[in-house]
Image 1 (cartoon, rainbow, N blue to C red):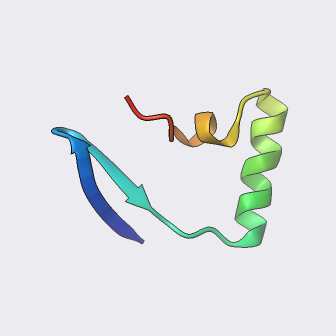
Image 2: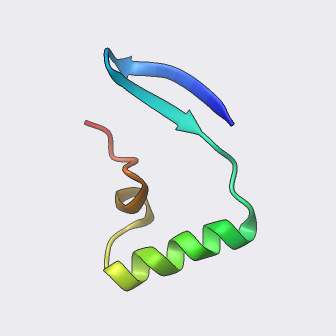
Length: 46
């Protein structure tokens, strides 16, 4: 895991590699909630 430079003050990013199983679980959960994976993990940004 590594922490990336904030895009704006007070807003940081975190990068964490996922295993294939974790990625599949995220995709399943997003589909169940009828949202995208990016929405689920908050990747849209401010």
